[in-house]
Image 1: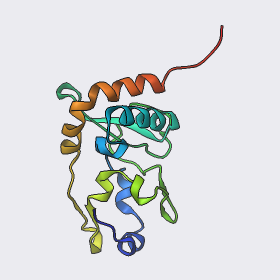
Image 2: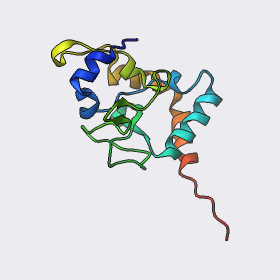
Image 3: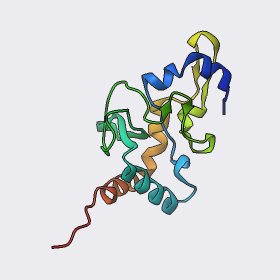
Image 4: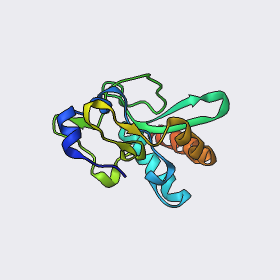
Length: 146
């Protein structure tokens, strides 16, 4: 984990303005049930989405929504500002931030080093695709009475 709030503050969160960090399954829990339940809550909040590197290879991952595109479960923008970025920095507590953010090593002059790629993140999600898609379906259910 790499945290350097001074470098990030001086930079203004340019990486967060370019693209949200991606997650690993462990960011949502330690068991399949916990991951499922937390994903459902995340998707229902409208602030987390399923994105992909390559659908034909089942390379999907979860990331925060992009500002202005909240409310979708599947979203594939090439860039945009993280929904959790504020004028004061990230609104998520450190323990709730995506692994892609925590494994980004802050460096001076905007030369930050990513230690977790979207492809590696997607590969870790592959064994949880059933949970990922079931959580998406559950999150999109509409409760109504006839």
